[in-house]
Image (cartoon, rainbow, N blue to C red; front, side, top):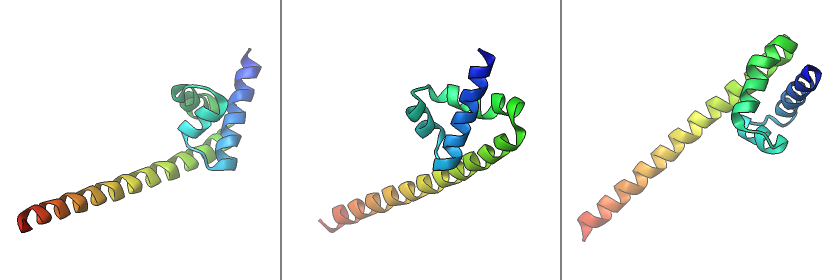
Length: 92
């Protein structure tokens, strides 16, 4: 059973590296819960292959940085839309 778990952790990690995938994308691909994937590629992977775990950690950090950037862009767009609506109301 332990061997299967180790193989699954490595498969998930390799998928993330090959596809620059997020936790959610990896979970969907392997039909697993995001919490399971996260535990496999962070906690469990470090006990199996430290080098691979550090590579996955970089992908996770990059994905997190992109998520923050997208969130900031979405917020800015929302504010622009609200300002445009307020300006239109003031004109009428």
